[in-house]
Length: 215
Ligand code: PTJ
Image (cartoon, rainbow, N blue to C red; front, side, top):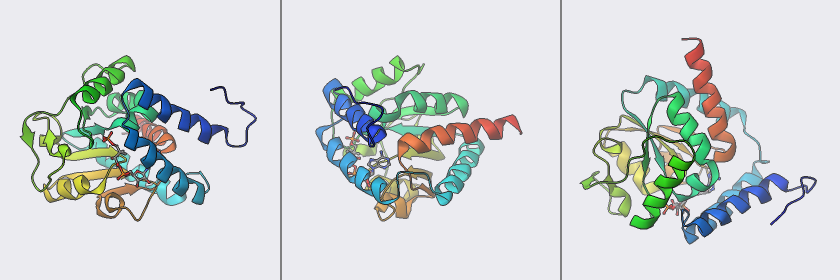
C-alpha cells in the first residue's frame, strides 16, 4: 500500500504496514496485530512522542546494558517486524547477544525471526533451547543456555508480563519498553521505558554510543 508522506498519520500508518508485512512474512503472529493496536491506542494518548521520563529511563537502560556482564536482547515477532535493523545495531553497539523468544509457540516462526535478523545484519542469533527459566509456564520458559539463561541484564522490547515477573524472580535485571504503563511488564521491570519501540530503540542506540564515546 502506498501512503502519501503528506498524510497526517503517515508514521502511524507506515508502522501499521510494517506489522502487517511481518504477518505476511511469517515473523509476526496474527495476535501481534492485536497487541499492536493496543500499543497504538496508548501511543495516541501520550501524543506519539517520547516523554521526559522515557528519555531518563532510556539513559538508565543504556548504563545498565553497558555495565552488564552478559546482556541479552530478547526478540519477539512484533519487535522483529518493527525494529529488526535497529536491534541488530544495538546488539553490536553494546555488545549484547540477540535471542529469539516468542509467546505464541512456533518453531518455524522462531527460525524466520532469526533469519530476518541475519538479513538485517546480525552475525549470530540464539534460539530457545532445552533449558528452562523457573516460575514460568508459557513457551517463553525455554531459553538458550548461552543467552537468557545466564544473562544478568535482559532488554525486552514489548511482551506479555508473566515472563518479566519470572525473570525478576530468577534474579535478572529486566529492561522493558511498553506503551502501557499499567501492564504487568511495565510494573514489574527493573527499568521501564514507556514509549513506542520505534522511537525508543533508536534513542537507546544513541545513548549507548554516547556513553561509550565519553567513557
Ligand atoms: O511474537 P510473540 O508470539 O512473542 O507475540 C508477541 C506479542 C506482542 C503478540 C505478545 O507478547 C503479546 O501478546 O503481548 P501483549 O500481552 O499483547 O502485550 C504487548 C504490550 O506491548 C501491550 O502492553 C502493548 O500496549 C505494548 N505495545 C504494543 N505495541 C507497542 C507496544 N509497546 C511499545 N511499542 C510498541 N510499538
